[in-house]
Amino acid sequence: WSATLALRTGRNLIRIPTSTTRRSVPPLHNRVLTLAYPSVSAMSHDQGAAPCEGKLTKQGFYQHVHGSINVYMVPWGSNTPVGTTYIFLLHEQNKNKVAVIDPGSSSDVVDAMDKLGFDSLHGILNTHHHWDHTDGNEHLKGKYDKCVVYGFEGDRRRIPGIDVDLKEGMSSELEDFFGEPVEVIETPGHTVGHIAFYFPNCKVAFVGDTVFAMGCGRLFEGTPQQMHNSMQKLVAKLPRDTTLYCAHEYTLSNAKFAVTVDPKNQALLARFKKVEALREQNMKTVPFTMEEELNTNPFLRCQDQDLKDCIGMSSVSDDSKVFAKVRALKDNF
Image 1 (cartoon, rainbow, N blue to C red):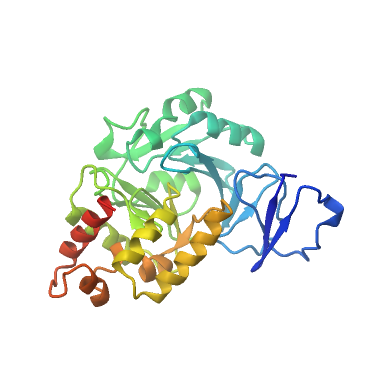
Image 2 (image 1 turned 135 degrees about the vertical axis):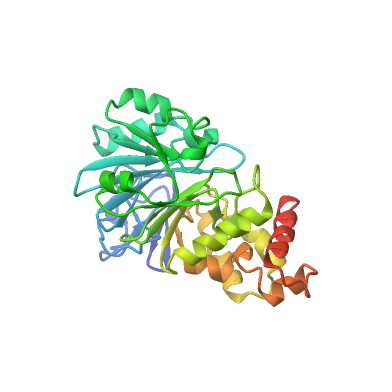
């Protein structure tokens, strides 16, 4: 056990000092056990875990169950200035297929595969071409001979090892792979070739660097108008109870900014406090729901009068212009 271990059971937080033994731990009565990375000292066997909390496996990876698909969160880059980056390992149980989304680090994927007992990696799905999402492509493809790389057709020249070109709409290639519908959604803004993957039966979407918790991706290639349109497209397509997986643990910094432009938003203030508490314990804040974002993400609240008043755009009716102003403020925050 680590020197000081924080256990969160329901809404209760228990701190266990160094001298505590296993036998002296208070009984948990089958409540959900959630641990912070990087501690791997305990495991939850409660199948009733909240979908956005997940459970920690004995191998040390958070697992989320969405229908027939198990999502394992593989953190890497936690010592970089930007904080933790997430790779998502997907196991489709009916067809026994394993895929990885945005493998920025091949060594972390191989380690997770070995620890979880997966012998074959069948597919790689890339949301965009940036190195921290694709750097592991070619090594993984070489190591696992059945591995196929899926990426946006417009980024064929920039995604390493791409085999299958994807375009917007329901993907027959990915449906064949997973055995259930998968929709590819073009979301340019962060890059011009960015896409998201939506599994409607599972009500889960992998949004890469388009939507972050209370934030959105920096505009490296696209325009504010493009990013605004992309986020609104996701709002239109995804039900409010859709679980969203983004690629980076930027939530606390996003929340600190959000309250400066939307200070009257009580839902935002409450979420800010929750996120602060989680990050103080080094706990993850991903995934989250579309409903949470609609209520607290300033980039999805550009029509809100209080927000517009706060940033000096009270009379502006064009939401994309409000979005551009919020993005500029975040860039200089």
